Length: 318
Image (cartoon, rainbow, N blue to C red):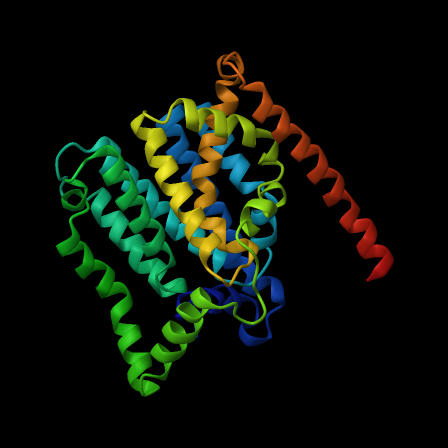
């Protein structure tokens, strides 16, 4: 009940190695490429914000997380969805923070809408949800009512539709609208009100797992929090918070929960963590700042100890 984009990519990467008879790693290559692209674009965006060193730290933090390590090795949608999502959000950053007037469509608006269309073909409207919540929160917080004009919605929707709509119409006509019923009714809306396939969890699920999913970046979580709070009036920090927090809250409220659902928000966290690391000296001089940093350090130590047990337990019990 997912769009065809990821399957087309898997067919393309498996074709040189035997097509349907290719080894499983050939079908996992799009996921590897997705993580590499996602980390690369995060590094590029981080460099535009923090300089080359900060961009390198942000990209490395994202690419080396336990979440990325798992998603890069599984034949699923989420790594390539990350790649499309970070392209869309990077373009949105330039449209909201850097652009004072509605820019020409050939540029950041085109990248934003093309990435949105690609994301629709990979896993439906997940990236649209992330971008829409970022746009809404940033616009209200900054009291900037021109944000919608900057993304150029009229030509943009046509671009996204040109990418995704032909296949969506074709598959629904072929299945007598059964695909729409399954993908929207069950796979999307069905996950909001109740847990799907026994993948439920309490509110706070993603927050509790963050020490592991963002590891080894867990070490910098305290600094990321200090930076976000003390610089919250900075327009770039405001954008990163508007990307991270609303997405996080939405997925905490949705009844169906899996660790990778929060992956599209992690580039924002990686950039905040890199920023915090670069300014650790000045941040830790602020009153009370050492407490969240020490808390993050102990979370890192605990997560490292627990993660190190997994291979030993697996060898013993599997």
